[in-house]
Image (tube, rainbow, N blue to C red; front, side, top):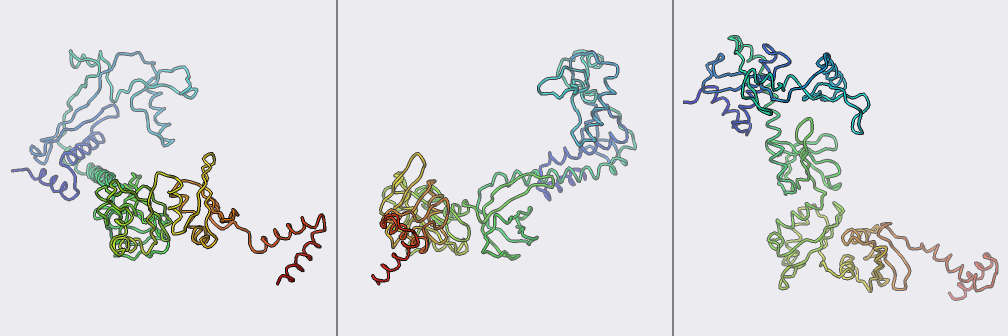
Length: 447
């Protein structure tokens, strides 16, 4: 039958979802810290072996070792160790990590080393020179590990329990954080059904069971409201480790969310028969999705829309009413750009490869559709195709540009001024004011 301490370790493993070996390593590290504090010295590299089955509540089952690595013999200056300690104190005061594998032997400055910096090549805490190692073990070789077992005082069991408690708790928290990080890191890009926990300012906290995710402002859809207890679909955007533990970022605004919902709702996308080539999205407003089929017998747009639009309507509801345009991807750039500007009808597409610019001509009655509200349609078309797009009337007059993202055509007033300038040219040098008067009179006569 397992001992009480072994049963306790296994219970912690089940509660924290940790492995038995990781918890045992944590206990050994805590016991080593307790021994070092009460009975060790700064030049000992304490390692503990703990056998839970042999532990009797005192010191039985605990073995303590001073572990060092064998290195080549070297001559050290008389004040070597003093300078080593001084260098480490300075590093700690600067908040830097102290030297672990060295003590100084002065070296000439190099391109990598700042002037005056010293190289540390021996650390008496973790290293032992070959000649000293052979006094303990005659057949010792370089890179061998020398273990010197230390006696365990009878009072160690009671004192270690007090000292090791906080270390064990901290190590268990770190181990739990690592398990959570590794678990969710492998799931980046996954579509998740999650529950909103609460709001903290503009940040929405998401309940993920044994972890908490965050929905940052840039990952939220402006038109949506997130109430505690509401279930939503979100994409697992990124998992990163911070000093406070793993940060799990989810997103409702990422184009990846659209792709994941398409794969969930449309079997042809899930099994790869229909491929999503690219997605251009303005979250909460409109999305364009370019699709293609690997089988000529399959209609990629029809597969995504579904019978009577059932599939695309389901996707739109999941996106909170966001408009979704599904277009046919084409290897022909002109055809692709024309499709990307749907529902507008395009007359022609002229490509300037040097500038990566597409000049698209449309009928006058299609201008508003091609440009879209606030230039949204042409802007999304440019994002989808990775081409700069300029919309022009059938006559050739430029009216919108994808880089500007809004109308750039002349207003009625500026257009009238252009007509006046044309009239002034016909008057052979007549002053502009006179030209304006004459143009106005001619306009009234025509009326």
